[in-house]
Amino acid sequence: METSPVNVCLGAGIIFISVLVLLWHRQGSMRRRRGPRVWPIVGMLPSVLLHLNDIYDWATKMVAECDGTLRFRPPWMTNMFSVVTTDPKNIEYILKTKFGNYPKGAYYKSIFDDLLGDGILNIDGPEWERARKSMSSVLHSPSFKTHIMRTLERSINGTLVPLLAEASRSASPIQLEHILLRFSFHNMCVLGFGVDLGFSEIGRLELAIKQALDATVLRFIAPSGVWKSMRFLGMGFEGKLKASMKTINAFTGRVIAERRKELSSDGRGRHDMLSMIMASQSQIDDRALRDMTLNFVLAGRDTTSLALCWFFSLLHKHPHVEDRIVSEIRRIVEVGSDLSVEEVKEMHYLRAALSETLRLYPSLPINWKEAMQDDVLPDGTRLKAGSSLIFPIYSMGRMESIWGRDCLEFKPERWMTEQAGGYKYPVFNAGPRTCLGKDFAILQMKWVAASILHRYRLVFLNDGDGIAHPKLGISLGFNNALPLILHPRSQ
Image (cartoon, rainbow, N blue to C red; front, side):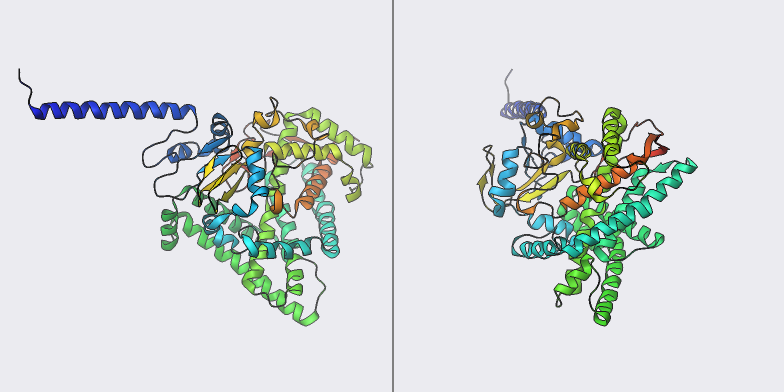
């Protein structure tokens, strides 16, 4: 039987296509063993979308499979990050050694521009240096430090402790996460804007900020062309962001206008961030004031409160750690008395337990950078100019290569000999961009934790089920709230 040329060509084409399919599947299988599967056109994005509910743990597994550095394959024609690394040598190189080559970059700034503007959290280069110098001069001034101590003492001993005492007397269940978030946000508004908001106003502002943050994080997932089109049309999460920013800007505009009028009439006297910046920079415009102060408030809004929530959930699962902390507190503080800042500073095991909490549940789970020039990381990874990098701080705390075989265990004892810092533990950033409010954040967490544990034993109503599941977001929140009852400790 004679075979026609057409049949020969058709058969060869079928064989060729079959070989390509087999090779692609084989390649895909190999890639599944070494990081996420790579799909045509859309790259690794489908794998990310499939794991949004457990994104941090899944990312940890993927990076570990790739020995600490994963080259992410983004969708075709997008600007999503291209390298994910947990290698401390790479982190030190990025954050310190070649700091100037790794700014946050234009793409990151475009994502946060509506919310953060030209604030310290969202800028690079000379602008960032000037903003950091300005904020540092305020944060380290004696008057602002005194303002911090007075605000903390008043809000903890005068507001938080009585609130918890009433809840304990009535045996009413409380949502610890909601109380601590409101407490922390109220403090930051007093320290940043110098205003003591009423319940309804602080609720509206807090909701607007939460919605703005939730919408902003979705820009990391959606291709830039998509979310920019949605912003232009005012659709979906971009429409919610626009509405939230209207509320936020109305509040900041009103406070700034009132403060300008107040300072022009009776001069200086306030020691909040906004007032001190206005007093030191008489020519600064309203937008710059808004950006600087709002960045300060957002930096401390939920980072400490969420860390405390993870801390208490870990104590629930490790009662021997709680017992040791309570013993330390009672060696230092007289039973029934309020805590002073000097007493809080002496609580070294409590500090260790909080450091261990942040290792496992860092308040900011990821950090983002962009390469300005072609470069090679210490582990040999090559980068082209414009490449984006992400280092998942959450994953770093779970790397056996960094912390050893017990990396998943909650062991505060490891911090009794090891200093909480460095490039394997960048929970407060590291290098030139180390968090300016680090010491304040640690002090607030210790003071709140000690004040609660000194008086109460926390009994979780759901026995702790479902409370340790991270939620996708800019800060590491919960998928579930923390319903509990406060039981007075025996004296």
